[in-house]
Image 1: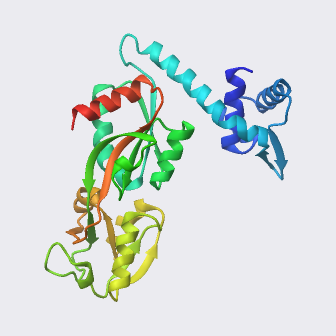
Image 2 (image 1 turned 90 degrees about the horizontal axis):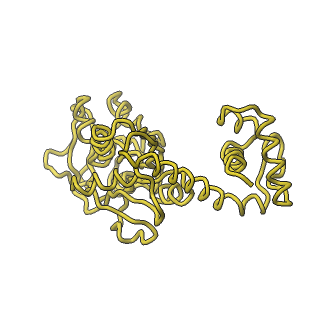
Image 3 (image 1 turned 60 degrees about the horizontal axis):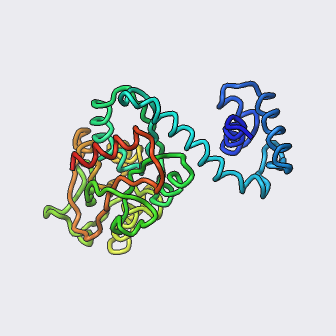
Length: 292
């Protein structure tokens, strides 16, 4: 068993077919097929079962996934550690972030990091919920995560964490929206509004649901693509509850941003798994600690 076989195996796991795995790896499809056969021969078991046009992991294949990811990750960390002996002049860092926190504080943090380490390549992976961040860190799909949770970060005892900020919730609307004059706005005072809401399970959706339950406001659009929220508000479709991280962006496009009277907040932090990190990830954490 060698590391290339494991990389090819994981590519098939992630891409679903040998053909897509070969495209992802920029290698010929027969190379991936041959590598998988050799790996199965060495292990003495089948790793995949064919289902229609795709492949499904066997029980043996499923058992191999986590150890294979950890071995590949450790090799990448070892290589990056050696390459950084004379300074952090390269490498790649993957950060999983929830959507609103990718707007802020992640953009500021990445901007600061790139200014210090311009040769490090940054990849930001989308994760909708705290559980998605934890899974990305567990599997090695990301080294760091920007997590926002209604509960204190201390509750995530399976992760290291660095508190970054606390975010509240605001209402964004066009200037012609009929909003109460007082601020922060008591959500029970909202009337006759059409709400644009995100997917269930998010803080923004919980506030929106509270408004819908306590008032005569109604749901206009439910959308998972959070990047469409502000364009929909600008188009006059309705108003939206968003995290305070959207305040600057919403104001920049001409929307009214009003604070909401709610006790719910989001605890935002930089999180990482209990394992050895690459030099780039360690540098990102050190920068974030020094900037607090």
